[in-house]
Image 1 (tube, one colour):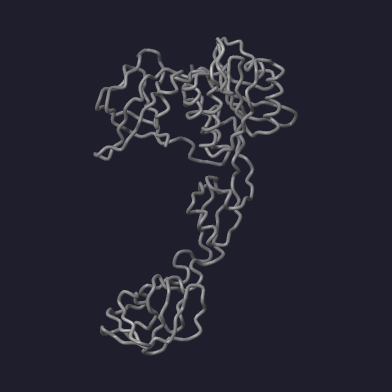
Image 2 (cartoon, rainbow, N blue to C red):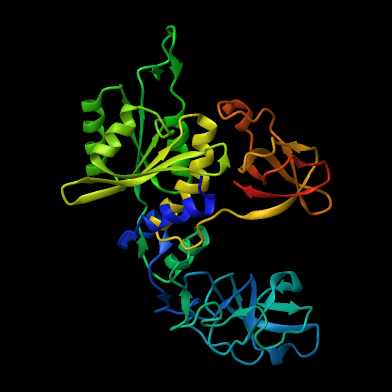
Length: 403
């Protein structure tokens, strides 16, 4: 057996980052920025009011209350046409440009309109409630740095700078294939020996949650030529491929036979439970090579090996630098048991919640069999249990947070 860390390194070293592309900012959410963004415009581009009120000269409000003559009104989007002079004010709306001559704004709540005058109950300081040119972003500022994972606020910043397109590492397409004569996916009644297909739907969802583009390659029967055709189709359409099943030692499975036929595969036995077997390699067709992640067939094993091994490699291909989910200390609210002496790290599915003490607390989702997906469905974390009996209630345990 090899360690999880060694398996992760083999897989990560076997994939490469995709070439950056330019996309509309609307399509860039969750993508990794490929270059620094330097501001070509200031934000805000002109001095404006931060609230509804009156634009005036601060020195005209030295003693409260003060009375000023109102000479006009400025709405957001309008252009001031008059200069504010001594003893004058202009009604101004939030975001409207400051008129020449004015250096402060008093909010409308501190004012009382009396005909063409306004009585102000507070004293203004120079610059009060005024947003100056570039007080958020100045021309030449590096606003976003390469490697940033773009969130909604980043896209808003880009739009505010007039950047309607951005260069990012693209989302990759990841094909998911399921095979087996025993699998049923159309909802029809099961015949003896048949089971419902679940792994493909699980893996398609995991691919999408990683911000990659899932491609459903369908359900293929246990026929070598059909599998070859499906894999060749995947090489032509996808940037990576995920399979489940047929990776155990000693399996004489057509998936294994086909993968060995089309590529150079590494068949691993990893010192973890579940998800001990794992395969990785490059499928080759002509000049095109596509990485393939061969996951174990049990659904929980498939989920765990995707999260711990395949997902980080997929993220690397999309330009991410922080590949692993957070591993944090937590408190076990009940014992987490495991069988000792197998030399493996056990990854138990748990529910993690923030306790009143500010720490993360976890409890088991229930039965931990690698086939028991229903019990694992509510998990939002994996608890790491090194070889031994597990941990007692109140003990500290390291957990991988899934969300």
